[in-house]
Image (cartoon, one colour):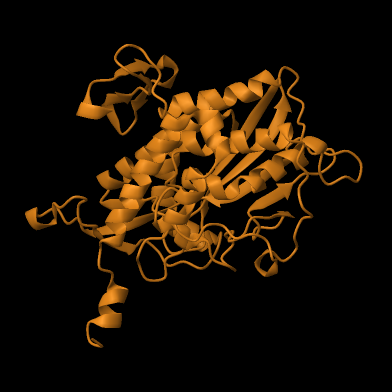
Length: 385
């Protein structure tokens, strides 16, 4: 990418959408290539398609369902004066639309319904398969869930959904954010829970649906084991921001260790598999909603396939995830970068160009963060020394 040269965008006509809130405009997603038509080793849609090829070779398909949490606040001060036009721009001043800590309360929902319904209608006008809209735990925190679909469709859907939410809210004097843990009083971190199951290509048989009294199938166990085995090196793709690692805390219904459990929301992998249940699946609760969906889904596919090919066996499920001795998730972005750089999986499957590209960007982000004097440092040292 030296010299900021031109690239080629190859439109995917199936992604064409007229914007319901801006009917003179439309979206058209593209695949990205070099000027000579050569593949770019870190182009997101290309990366996901490459990972999907591994499933296709085994006559398997991945089905994913999305649970997406985010915040919508009232905009008090947009911070658009010249002094705020920094790089990046100064964050706006906001306040909640409603108080929180009444999970799924119909009273809370009624007070937020006007904007949630607006977002739902725009999502459906974009042909996004909205399954539910919910009031989440925190003040002004929402959750949208989506019907199952193939990974490429849902990666495209996630890109469109995040942008739609921010644009529609901005037109109504609101500020929507998919930042994991905003620096605001009483805020609750947002996560992105990915439901996933493997089906047989052609027949559509769910290979995660157990028989009899078994709690997992062989392939489900191998998939879980693969996700666990490669969780630390995958974190840079599931949790790509410095802020996202501040969600990994105990007793917050977010994972902090690499483990799985039966219908346990404290574990990283939540198993939802029962005999006779065609929707049998696992839910990975590790990601933040700022993640690149193409990279995120690719990480799940490559990790799961490694478990299948290696015939890995998962450890026993946990009942008390915050009291186990399981390996912890990385505590910081730089720890995740180092795990990613040491990974043989991603170098073998996606190539040196991809690994070096992600590593270079994220190390630069970490360096910028480390050069910033924090409020903690000011309070700790300014008066003492």
